[in-house]
Amino acid sequence: MKVENLINEQVKHFAFGEGTVSGAEGNILTVRFENGKESKFSYPSCFYKFVEIVDDGLKGKIEKDVEKWLVDSGTLKQEQLNKKTMETQEEIKKREIERQKVRIEKAKAEAQRSRFFAGLDNPNAATEDE
Image (cartoon, rainbow, N blue to C red; front, side):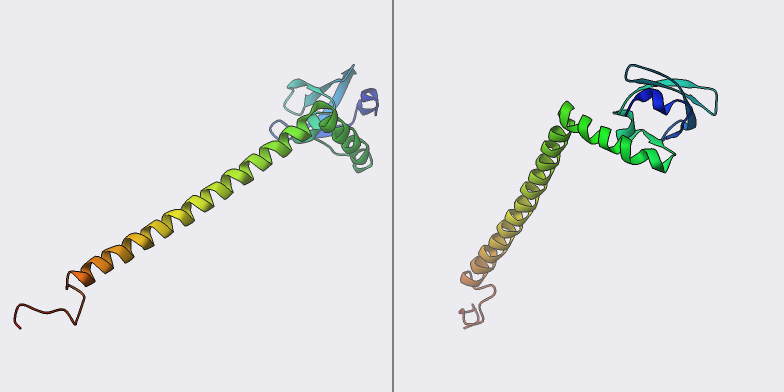
């Protein structure tokens, strides 16, 4: 989509609120917000996480441009790698927790065996009274 086609379109920025696209040059959009602040954004990356178009008819076209940008820029691949890394780290944490539980259970069992053979928990062990 040509960025010039977005001039005068209403947008919502997740931090700045509502605004209107007031200009476009190359892939840079200028947006004037209700508070009078004017900001420039790179198209289509700004529509990935920060800006949303109000016109539902344009959302699909912009989403296609964003998807293409994600692939072309390597952002999608990086996010997939980040997600895989986080999943792997979570699996490692879960395995370590399970290993720790096993170590604790082994230590408890060993302590119980020691007490048993020391006669502390063994009802069949000879007592000093006998």
